[in-house]
Amino acid sequence: MEKFKHISGVAVPMLRDNIDTDAIIPVPFLKDPNTDFGAHLFHNLRYDVDGREIPAFILNRREYRRAQIVVAQKNFGCGSSREHAVWALMGFGIRCVIAESFGDIFYNSSLRMGLLPVILPGSAISAVGDAVERSAGRNPMHVDLEAQRITTPDGVEFHFEIEPMRRRMLLEGLDAVGVTLLQADKIEAFEKQARARRPWMYDVGFENGTPV
Image (cartoon, rainbow, N blue to C red; front, side):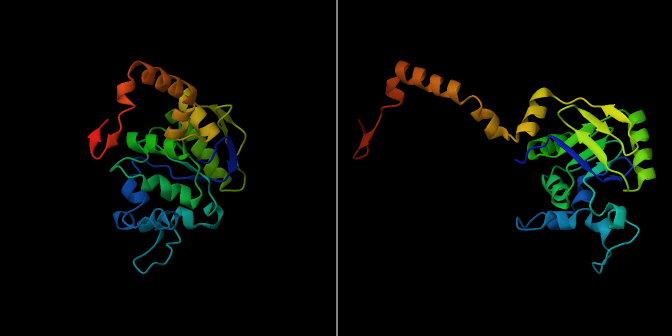
């Protein structure tokens, strides 16, 4: 998993509640594992029925085409569970979503795959959203996971909380297997001890189909 320490990039304001996973990546694009999910991010909002871009959709605007951060309001990523929603955001280039709250499955999937979901209270979201809209992509937003701090395009800082183990996983680029392997020495010690106590569980072999 790609490490996440800090980013400085364009933030796109998507200031509404309940942006669900079906809006983020519609069902028809879920079946083929070779699909470029980023190309279909918000497909039904980005493109018309003939596949042409809809100019009014915010990600089709020149200033937000390289956005790395989304600022939304309540319950981002709600709806059906689909990891594809995280893949689509990351495929587009989004590395962080800042919102007042998230759908539970989306939140956990994001952390497992290297997308940072930042939760801020409603008053902070309003301030961040206003700053992002005023900037309109001219100045970057800074997200510093090590310091647990975001800095808006106009220089105002907000602290955010994140579970320590989740923070470590993102900083070190660890997935669940990687976290388990952090305990490799303890696992090996346990196996040695277990083998010594119950050798019959480990030394059983077969000869012509019969245990020996």
